[in-house]
Image 1 (cartoon, rainbow, N blue to C red):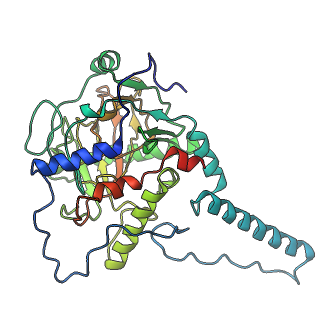
Image 2 (cartoon, rainbow, N blue to C red):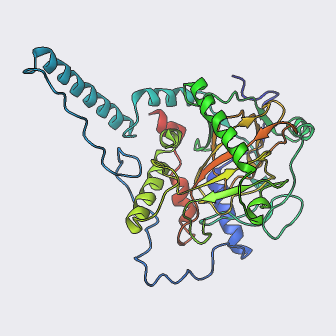
Length: 412
């Protein structure tokens, strides 16, 4: 796999996600552009607010935490034989060995093969080295900032336009942008100056053909349903899109009214546990809530129906500032010609094949897509964590960044 091309960059500093997040918080406060309301809504009839930080004990289960039924006991034709006892003993020893391996690695409930693949991925990281002083000066506290990030200013916080294939070539050759020629299969972490994993090119499951059949089916369903979808004008003409396409949000969020990712769990276990704990608390607070997907730690998701689900440079300011969102983009398009994911603050242009998955902190890193051909189709499914109740911003970003894993912590 080729990870970029051309001479190595030699800018003064590496990108530091902690400094990025701190700048966004400080500068948004200074500009009085916080998106959270000055006064919290009246929750006098509600229970106490959910705590920001809980030091959770690792749980071996995913949300929801409904107990699994015990496996059916074997019905013997006669008394158990010596071979039966040996098989049962072997199963117990394997289970004990798995539990010991998981305890040593600090990520309960994850199979050894997945941890092995995690270790392999840590050997092929992408380190971003841009001058942090050139980063956009915005500030999300709990959430991202609405202010535009490009040439033009719009009230809804959008700015800029979609960049063409020729412009991407120009950016990669002249403006210090790095092209990542990712095949879309293997996992590759993106790390900052301090070795923090701030994003992951997730790839696909090992059963590539089976996964392709699933994502192709999803793309077909979204393509056929889009023409019959009843949507509002706001769902069609939204701030992320250059040209109108239906975008439908689902799931609970604070103030906006709006498949368990193993990648998330193995590359950011503390952040994963935080998401899991918040979902458990939310479920306890309101057991009647209906969730989008069973066995997920993401409270919300967005369906971008296409046919050309392409975005302009933007921040997902309604998402948890340090949280990750999971982007999967099914469709029929040539990833060498279009559909690239552009991470502007990291100066990366990433080849993003159909059906692959990428995890990014979408509230603090500007991102967009390159166009696809007129006869091609691209949709996307995004899982995300929406903003939460307010907390003192002095320590908010420190606690958030502390949830990121480092390369060294996962290698040990």
